[in-house]
Image (cartoon, rainbow, N blue to C red; front, side, top):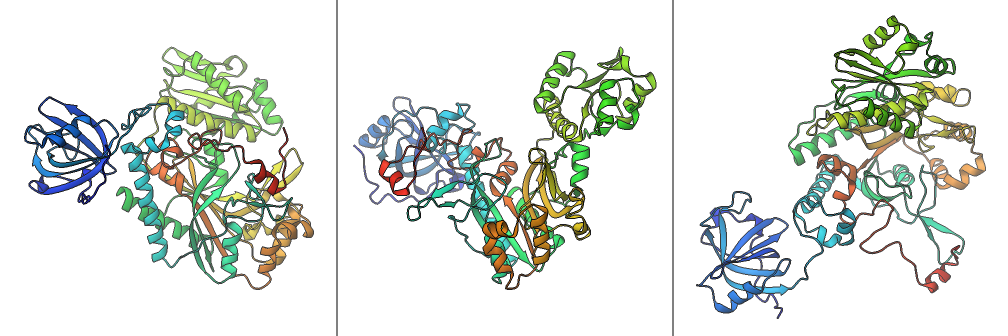
Length: 591
């Protein structure tokens, strides 16, 4: 029979008791990890979010209490009062392993069916099952530690920005749909049939309005939503540390961001981050690492071979250069044993999957040089390639020839794939870098036009304004990303507040004055009443937690995540709604 707690109020958390508590009468509450019956002696391990403590029941225990201990099973919810004593057999595997509680009062508060999987640390149960029973999965000690650490990260965040004069302000969740770079989640209006709210992809426009309103330093731990394909570091709903500052330029925003990162790593991980953080231009990141979010924990830079092979007899190389492309390579050190011909064939398939037509290679073995293209080039050209790549015996060179928009991202992806297979990426290192001087526009082959890489209120570098309409490819933005271990942690920019410049920007993007007014009218109108220069950034809290805690997926740091197909297996959402609800909204679903 289940019992009420009555006057049994918890005095201690399970994992906090130590030998210094010997002789104290304490009360603990929690879930039963396991029960062991040794006849005249019963042990019950009780778990809460701080850890596990052992309860002991013996021949001196009151009979009714002993019987309840005997009836106890895993995941029962119990309360126990007793005296802390030293254990006869010490368990060095847990912090409470020197003591136990000799129970003199015991209540079963809730029974439990046998769970679909064991509640243990580092469970290797299928993720689909764990997510279906997420409330049980969240009982696991490692997942609880992650969620608690996330709470601490959020607290340090609020403390830091508060101490630096920022005001936390909430922005709306039901807003007007505006172009943000991804698909919106829409909410049909019951009162205005045919019209929708959008869930915010970010608080971008509202935080700029707050600068117009005179709140010169804003921050918010904001919930954001994007209807896009999921991956390990992306969820449809996510949390962003959002900030905006008035009367600043790039250096001011980066300084605040760096101070935050330094404070956070010191308080949470006791890691000293050296400031200032290094910076790399977007162009260098792409040319050397094939990515605008380079993982700098290992080397393996991309090398340009175009000048060496432009006149070679190998048509693949020569043709790529003649068509305005390039020939580039990466050199994997001491990789010849790992990258056999068979594994290089697999790597070639990876390259083709990314978009390359194929992969050329050189293996420097003890027996000599093996290559997929040696017969098409001269010995001098081969030696020049090897020298340029600084390759030695035991190394493997892989080469891609195509337009830069193919060669760079392909080699960037292969660089990561090879480094993972070779196990050369340090696991205990946090490598941070600012990526600066972003291109303002990217060319869209499908529409034969230039699209903004950022929201249209991002300011261009002063020296690039002259090229806005004449040569968009030369325009760089006052934008910056913070990258850690190959993951984008933050993105931000200085904003446009000059009406004439903003009009030029809209023109460059092909937006008429009417279209701009329809999409951004309330912000454009606000700027007419005086807008201080401002800029800011958004820092991904989920990703920050994931990297700092060395997790493989955002699902390890989010309490109730969605699966890869954007479904919540626990609540079975999205789900079919009541017909009347749909009718009230004035919408109809196609079969």
